[in-house]
Image (tube, rainbow, N blue to C red; front, side):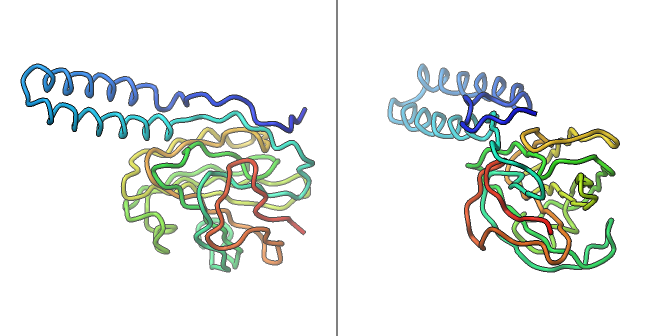
Length: 227
């Protein structure tokens, strides 16, 4: 498929349509009532807060159209905007049942929450597990929180798992992946609403290309290179 090096224009994600419309109506009603029935200082204070909160929501539901623009063979890209909070070997017991390298990206409420496929390949498994809603950066969030799993087999035969994890504020995980379909870097894998995390599980010996605390840009930052 064609790769375009520059970033395209940013649009709003369809997952946020209803939330943004209802929130706009709510803020309009509240501020309208305050304008007619409250002290001026209270109206202006609430108006300022409403503008800030709604601006954050609009930023949250952005849907950037991004293109990686480089060869994707053996490349693992960041599936989300955010920062690296985990780089370690772990026992993965949900699918692989062995030791894996886990790289985790935490998304705060100020990050875009669209998720991208981290590798090209064929989708081998899609699953969803109900769970808790602990803070997404905690270690046990990977196994205890509500989550969705997407396993992808690359053209080289390497299986990579991406796990979308709900956070303390997140209450909905959307996954577009379907088992048996081809998937590509540049395509959206899903969306998580409000504060969350994505874990990527890779074979041991994979070359790590990021550091702890590093900021990532979804579908742009190379986080690892497969052997």
